[in-house]
Image 1: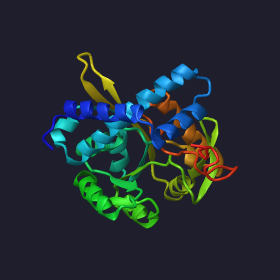
Image 2: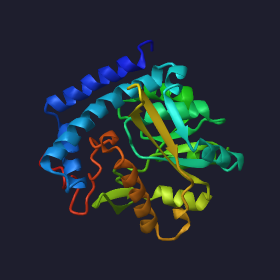
Image 3: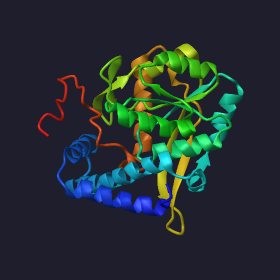
Image 4: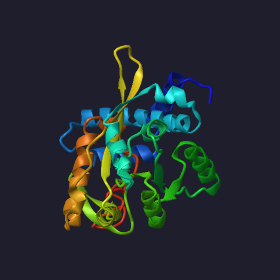
Amino acid sequence: MKMPLPFILALGYFVGWLFWLIPNKRKKIAHRNIELCFPDLSFKDRKKLLKQNLISNGKGLLETIYAYWGKTEKITERVEFSGLDVIEKALSEENGCLLISCHLHPMELVIRAINNTLSKPGHMLARQHNNKIFEEHVDIARRTHCKKTIDKKDMKNVLKSLKNNYPVYFFPDQNFSYQFEYINFFGVPAATVTGLARLAKSTNVPVIPWFGFRRKDSNGKTIYHVDVLPPLGIFQGDDIKENLLKLNQLFEQQIKKHPEHYLWVHRRFKNHPKGRNYLYKNL
């Protein structure tokens, strides 16, 4: 892809502005999620956050395309890292590690930058798209820097990657319809996958959280900051619900730094104790 990143971001802004301007279901879902998760915000502030989020969502869509087909050096020069040595230390112990994060808009772009910087690029756990042709193209693009993608249900291959001392990217913050517990997320019951807690406890591999956000430098240039935190020790306890609550609380803390960067267009609360789509049924 020959288009420069500033042009990509400008185009993404325009796409996001259209998301905001034109009535659509994703806009309604994002509005409902923001309403549920930020009840203390005024109507005016929720509307402002919704607009910022949809514009950021547009940027994220174009960033993902750039992450797949953009130039490596143009991506890496825009990303700054804090704590990357935490991952390298885990790899030096030759047990692999789980790199966990939540669905922030720039995630695909910063994953490419991380993998281009690490001594051993990570594998990615991801949900397969329903469109097989589209999935094939995305998988080929991802594997230029991820080396291997793993279906989110394929724990056998996750274990194999960890055994071979690879980092594995894991995003456990979306709605799950199997092997889940209802755990509060911003005070709302959310179907939260239990597989991460079981996997971390059974393998005893380091679980390393990381988060990537956009920011502007002193010259107004868009920079991506990746913050890698120390390994979590919460998954060695026996109370899975308590462990998952602590994980969701960590995600909340990070999302609150830049709530406009989170994937609010996803039906995070699709499964609900009162029934499937209970919180979205009138959208």
